[in-house]
Length: 309
Image (cartoon, rainbow, N blue to C red):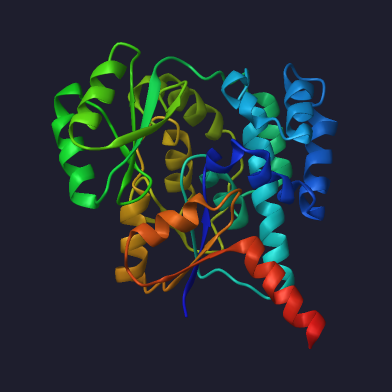
């Protein structure tokens, strides 16, 4: 059995029930204390921390500085990997998408959480920027493909969360045409993010991140890293640096990532790190017959077995 750990984006941060179990993990509490000690007086940190503690991430669209959600999600995800390690779970591959690529990179040994705190503190405020992202669900993969082809003239750079779910960024002016084009091809619109995620409007931020990452210390990953942007392994520091900088402005294809890891790299088991179970379902949409499990459920199930042994 070959296992890949999957580090998703902010999918699971909309509802407290999906991320609050992670807040109780010792690994999260320790890392978040370190983040608060370093960044607690930075603008917006205390407000975000209070909302996080109260489980009020419905306020996420109003977050004024995205550094703090990035730190929080990374701390949560690394805490989950601590729990997996405690029950003997190991990753043969690591992958992810969106902000999950940060925790993926740290887990692989290319940097530490303390390195991330220092990097975040040195950055200026990271605001959400312009534009919108429409997220839509199709009945099947061909329907999603036809809709995206029809949107080609708009010059969109859509990301695929799964075979059936797409995220299409664009300017405020593009949004009505994007929504209309998706709906006309039978896709159900179920979410609208208040910025152009993983689209060309974020290129200025990518250039700034690339400059800053040029001065950051990164190490060659110890665990194989597979990029959902490049659909290829990242085995050296220059590739990691360039991919992390492009994260905010480049589309990703998690659907193709799942297929490629299974068909070319022999992955038969995907462990969703969370928060939430969205990535677990995205793997199942591929219809490959691979095992797709949730990390916290796996930890709980193994703990029950250990107590009853």
